Image (cartoon, rainbow, N blue to C red; front, side, top):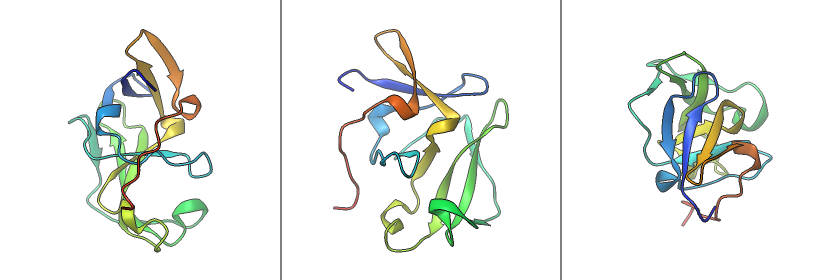
Length: 122
């Protein structure tokens, strides 16, 4: 959006990140946003998980959750197939787990926000 956005946990409204750190908004088929940095209220597990279905099938990743309420909010890819390899080590938020506060006093579902086309593939 032309305005900046702040990403909040859907469960408790804790601030998780913002659109200034957004580096790769993914298409609706994947359902997540990718950021370079997040707030200290995003925590991740020490153990790796393996995706058994969907876009993370066969990927190894660390689960991200909200420090305040414990809601699963995303993941950090550790290993992935070539189509997602460029996202390794970045913070990926599930669009269904966050809401966006647009700095013009508007709250909107993350899945309904069109962020500018930015990519880390290059």
